[in-house]
Length: 497
Image (cartoon, rainbow, N blue to C red; front, side):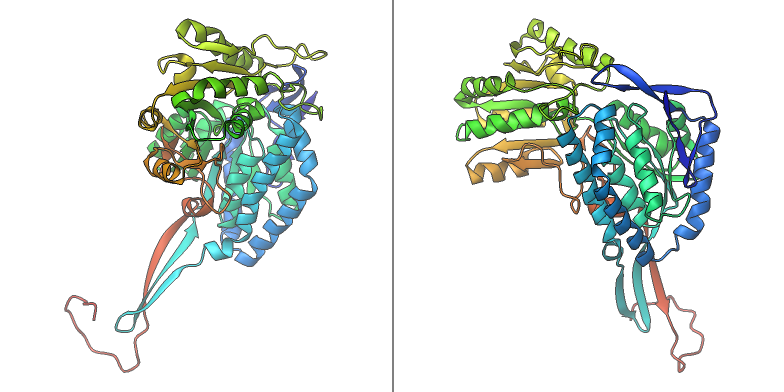
């Protein structure tokens, strides 16, 4: 059986604990890999290596850092199919979706390549007689990232390229469910010329996470995952004096107004709800149908849903792959099975779905629930699977009130031909990312990603300018070079003139 080991100090390091986690192929249900689970001592070794590497990396020129990142970009592009295959094998998403994940991660590598522009400081001259003031940004030191299973390559690339471009060193703790893509990225970074110890990967469970949160030499922690864990990460990290950005879960609403093109809306609802088997924090999980659009829109979505081709991610014919684990598949199915008892109409039931030749795989079909009460579990909880809820609203005002009453505020979208309604929506809706006729409004790399309310814990969004600010701290320098003609003693309080 293949073993995925740690990456510390620029080389693979075998796990020393004797503890391993199973890594499954979700399409077959078979365990073909195990991943080493780090001890406290192993996490400490990674942090110590990163701390030692920071002594030189933190003062390395921007030109050299940028050259390495450009080379990393070239290598990721050259190996994107390989990375996609690793993602498909351990996460299950179809190959085209895995390629898209790599492409979106590359956007942030490209952002990091422009770090010299992002780190330009400010200068004010002659603020007082002979006095200049400048503002600069400097790296924090050792920073850590804890990343989720659903984007095993993209989310690590949302973090470490910006962090190391800013001069920090990085300890990455990827999901133990699909760890190989993160390890391969570390290998490619080393091949690009990244010095040993600048990027380290430790695999593990709560033991590793807690140690990173507690370690006195870790200055900041980035996290993407569920809301309960994001809350825990923030609380624990802040308790130990760390800077933290923790992105949590979501229940993203897609508002469809009566004037919308319903075929276009149905296509986008399908794409956004069932892509990557719904295992996206930006997936549309609720469609809010306004006025008399509901019946026709539900029919159009249902007609499309039953035609989706579900199968192994490495089959080019597959449009949707399996879920990450058997336990998660069963949990998703339980929401569908319980929906009718809680007042919803089950239009399409994807539970019990199997794929010929892959009966042991973690497959589930797509489900569509209509007229879902806001009190139902399927509406209230983040399901993180291919389940789309439809709720009805008589008016725009009723719909916006429903969306804004959600505990989450990650992403949302409106489908309409009315520019005035769209403008009003983008100003009134309480969410961090808004799409206008765009169902998954994930920002491009030079803008920042992050939600509101229970979708974000911490002060900074991820990547973009927020990412640069998160991984640096500001310093203001006030300078005076006395003129040779100056002199004398003056005990008065300095004044700005």
